Length: 165
Image 1 (tube, one colour):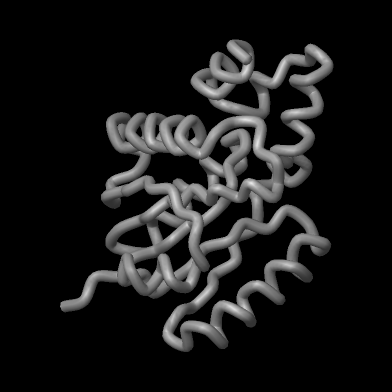
Image 2 (spheres, helix red, strand yellow):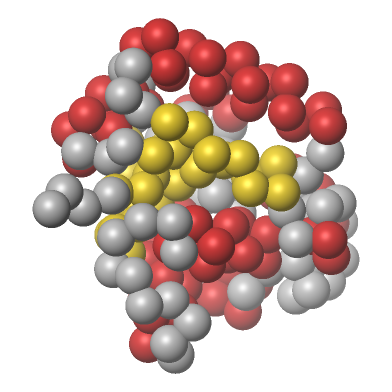
């Protein structure tokens, strides 16, 4: 029997409760979940790819340890085409989170390109949880930049990391 490997890619700069919600739900879609942290230097990330990967891995481990997720989770970083990573990791499903209709447009285009590059790869869209629709990493960074409290948007490990900058 072939295992279904689910791939959830993102920049995670910083990791938010919205991302964790998608991670929890994506883990139920397959036999293994890979959370892939994109280098994405073009986006000018606040945190390094190593810092982001460590934060995601720590939160993934916490979710596994407390029994929230029972599916095995791997966290890795990448700087290649997503379809190449999917092939390399033998993933058959990409999960993308959607907050608003505006997200769908760009995600639909990316899913179409990914399908053209890797015909066996399916993209599944998960709607953000109702209480997370408005949360975007760029807003969390903005609130933090001006001294606002980000603890209702991001886990404690991320808040500590952001406060140490």
